[in-house]
Length: 147
Image 1 (tube, rainbow, N blue to C red):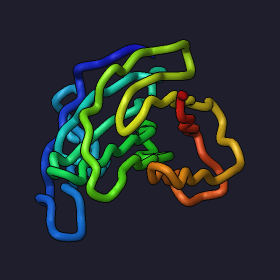
Image 2: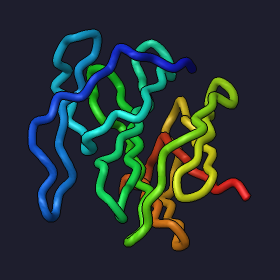
Image 3: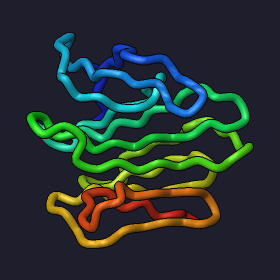
């Protein structure tokens, strides 16, 4: 894993009352046809040659949320997570590479994010801070609260 600066977001549709900003990822100054939610690219991490973990926010005062995407070139979004809670706000910070398959960061708490090479079975919901895995039975990302 390594931090990368070759990814930008091109706004396709601005935020509305019920939807976050929709953006196209631009990789190495080339449109990717990969659409994700969130106006601000907080950080991008290259997992390997074809996969990236992308963190986005939308700058919504008093209800900021964090979107986390696993992107695979040629496939698009293969998994995604959301962290947010009504009437809460925070700043994404402290992103660190822990090892070749996990990251740690702070946003409405302290978190460890594991990135699997192969899909695992399960759906996760944390009731203290809303954390939803892509509602599929298989996922590539696992988010754990650090206490």
